[in-house]
Length: 294
Ligand SMILES: C[S@@+](CC[C@H](N)C(=O)[O-])C[C@H]1O[C@@H](n2cnc3c(N)ncnc32)[C@H](O)[C@@H]1O
Image 1 (spheres, protein in one colour):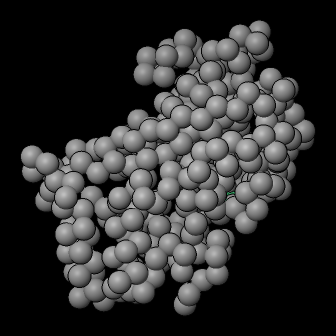
Image 2 (cartoon, rainbow, N blue to C red; image 1 turned 60 degrees about the vertical axis):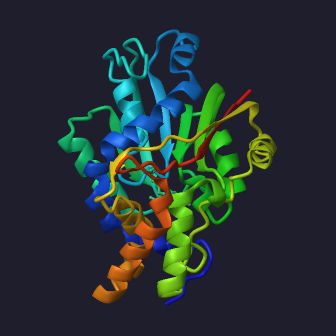
Image 3 (cartoon, helix red, strand yellow; image 1 turned 90 degrees about the vertical axis):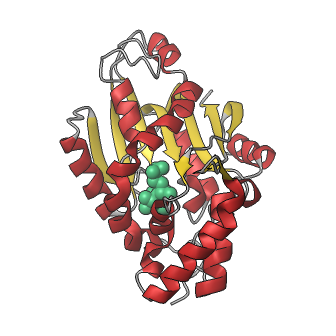
C-alpha cells in the first residue's frame, strides 16, 4: 500500500524496528548528541536557575535519544564527554507512538536511568502548561510532523523565559549519500522511496529557511551549526541495514529474498565509491538549530 505524505501510521509500523536496533546503535547515537547538549549550554541554564534542577522536555524521543543523553548529563555526576559538572535535572521523554514510549521505558529501566518520565504526546499539541521547561530538545523529529511550524510554536510555548530549544535536523538529501542511495535503490527495486513511504526527512535541510521558521515560531538568539561525521565500517558489513529497517522496515518485511538480495547488492555498489582502505566512510550531514524563549 502506498501511504500518504507524512502519514503518522508509518511510525506505528516501525516501532518494532526501532526497538530491535536501539541498543546496538546507542554508542553511535550518543556521539552526535553532544552537539545538542552544547547548543543549549546546560551549565549557563543551571547557573541562571541558581543551581535548581533543570526540566528538560524531549520531543519525538523514539526509543530514547537524546532523552537518555540529557538525563545522564543531569544525573548529578560529572559527565566528562558532555563537560557538565554535576548538574541535576529531570527529563520528560515523549513520542506520538505509544509503542515507542514503551520501548523507551524498558530501555531506561534496563540502563538504570532514574531521572526520566515517559509519556505519549503529539508535539503539535503538547499536554504541558506554558513555560514549564528549561530545555526542549528534538532529534530528527520535527520534520515528521504534519504541521512542523505548529510543533515549533508549541516548543516555544512550553519553554520558560530564558530557556533554550534545540532541534537536530537532516541536511539535504544530496549531502546524505546513505539516504540518497536508499531512496534510489528502493525506488528502483521496490518502487518506493521516502516520499511513497510517507516520510519527508529533509524539509529542514535549508539552514536559512529553517532559522526563519524558528524565528516565526517566536524564538530569538537563533543559532545553527552543520556537522558531517563519517563512521569507519569494514566493507564486509551491510552498515545500511539498521537505518534502512528503521525507515522502511514495514515495507522490507513484504520484500522477497530475491528482492532483498538485489537491494543489498545495489546498496553496496552505490556506496562503493566511499570505500577507502577496506572501510566504508560515508558521511551523514545534519544541522543543529537552537533558539531561546526571550
Ligand atoms: C526519526 S525518529 C527519531 C527518534 C529519536 N528522536 C532519535 O533521534 O532516535 C522520529 C520519531 O518522531 C515521532 N513522531 C512523528 N510525528 C510526531 C509527532 N507529531 N509528535 C511526536 N512524535 C512524533 C515518531 O514516532 C518517531 O519516533
